[in-house]
Length: 139
Picture 1 (tube, helix red, strand yellow):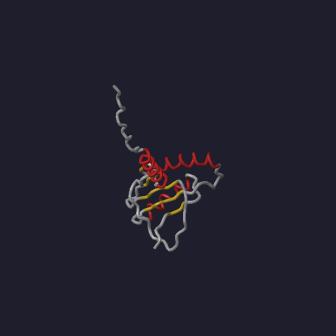
Picture 2 (tube, helix red, strand yellow; picture 1 turned 120 degrees about the vertical axis):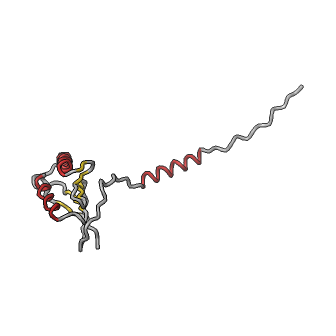
Picture 3 (cartoon, helix red, strand yellow; picture 1 turned 180 degrees about the vertical axis):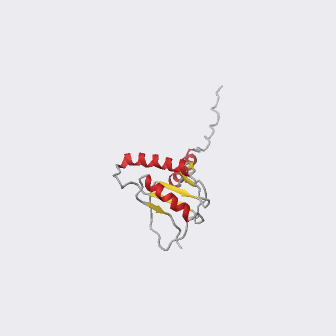
């Protein structure tokens, strides 16, 4: 007696090409996304007649209530101490000369008092910042 081979099943379609497309899309979206740390509080900058582009890594925030923040540190003393540490570590990397160094970018709320801003500026100068860029909104 002769047995015949059972009919062969067709293998299921491979899902590997679909997985490849999904991973390529995932990589594309991860590479094109802009990931930025959240700001410690909402700041609406004052308007200016002209606006120059300022680029800096050291961004200090001043709220409308006069609260100062830098990265994760809140409160004037803590924020300025963290800013000083960041400046020192940045200056060891780029070799800052006396009176020259990285600029600090100040994002002040439009509701912040001029007195609070005037109190903050000398403290930034005492930390060794010769240049402070105030961020404003275009009219």
